[in-house]
Amino acid sequence: METVNFLLDRPVALLIVLLVGALIGIAFERAVASADAAKRKAYWQGRNAQRFGKKGAGLRKIEAAERGQAIRSDMAADQLKVVSRAKFTSRSLLNKSEAKVFEALDKAVIARNPKWQVMAQVSLGEFLASPDKDAFFAVNSKRVDFALMDEHCRVVHALEYQGSGHHTGASAAARDAVKKEALRKAGIGYHEVIAGHTKPSELRALVEKLVVEP
Image 1 (cartoon, rainbow, N blue to C red):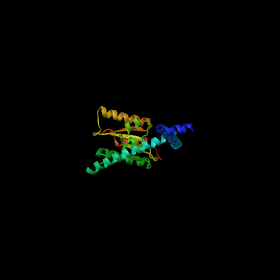
Image 2: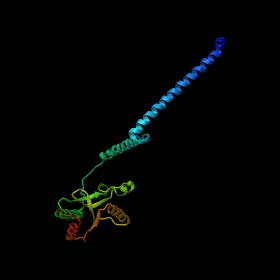
Image 3: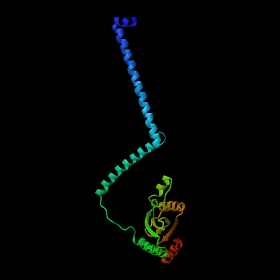
Image 4: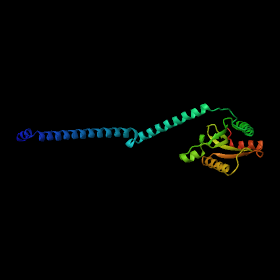
């Protein structure tokens, strides 16, 4: 009671006490709100951890994938603009010499086993796979002239036509070496058909050796 009378007799002191009390109250409310926010954050982190993995690792992967899709969509939109402005014409997949080899191969393969097929100008990335991304990208866009596909749609053998239009030089040899090694490691045979040297009878004999009879 004496304390109250003391403060009432001194308005300035009373004002200071009230102000200090108000500041303490505000600080307390903020501390409580911060604690509640921390609890809510921990709760949702726990939910995300349960749903997507420890500390939301799965959620981060999903977000990264979404960002990647957005970037690819933007690239596709830009590419569409470029393509829309350009002119395109159709051209032959094979030149005349390659077309003759394809026809002879196709007839020989069908005669040997009708369930097998001859594919032309196939990218290695279409029928090879590797857990090593760098290795896969190294061969992804490289092509083989002809691929022999069995009844299970699996490429079993690759044939390269070494014609007059075949690229020569150190770089071409290096590219061929990359293809050969990738095919070898995948258990796919590699064979060459040389223009002016491989006779039709030799081509048929090669097909009989490579293609399994039904």
